[in-house]
Length: 224
Ligand SMILES: Nc1ncnc2c1ncn2[C@@H]1O[C@H](COP(=O)(O)OP(=O)(O)OP(=O)(O)O)[C@@H](O)[C@H]1O
Ligand SMILES: [Mg+2]
Image (cartoon, rainbow, N blue to C red; front, side):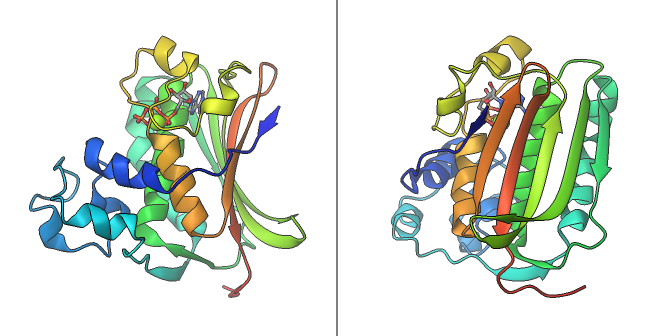
């Protein structure tokens, strides 16, 4: 079963920035003023009220640059290796050597990958395989860079699928895992990917596990 999230107001990122430890404004939107946080990168700090209206107006610009997606993925996967090893999860990267450079905002895209790979490692049980792959694919009449984060187990119950990208939604797989979380990660991913003019979807099936795919446009394709 494949689910595309319904369009949502851009509030997800803003609220998440206010409420989620480790998901600060500075990490997600490097264009925000440094004084907005007043604390080291990665530390939790509620934003001063003055910053929130800037975000609400969409005034914080993302800084797009051509990037090697598989290098970003490798960077994020390295930071999850120890936890995957402890949980006896096999973490695999399947890069596409022919992937062109993709225009992304580095910090926010690292945040997306961190949320997706972090979820897969968090919610997969011992013995599961987590595979992160990239490919160029056609969709909606154009060419896209697709990043697929797949965990061989567990499947997400069908009744949870329509709610995954809603703010503060924790599904059964999240609750039963015993892992901490407040249900904002996927709402943040959706917001950031849509700011890249792409989208994110999920497929989940008891026989195949769960896969989240991020689709990013290749309209200004740059060969490597
Ligand atoms: N890879 C996955 N495999 C199985 N279930 C998943 C996976 N990713 C997300 N989920 C389910 O989707 C729910 C929402 O995920 P989301 O990342 O938005 O929030 P969270 O992980 O619960 O909390 P947070 O990201 O705020 O720490 C999770 O609670 C979990 O039930
Ligand atoms: Mg999460």
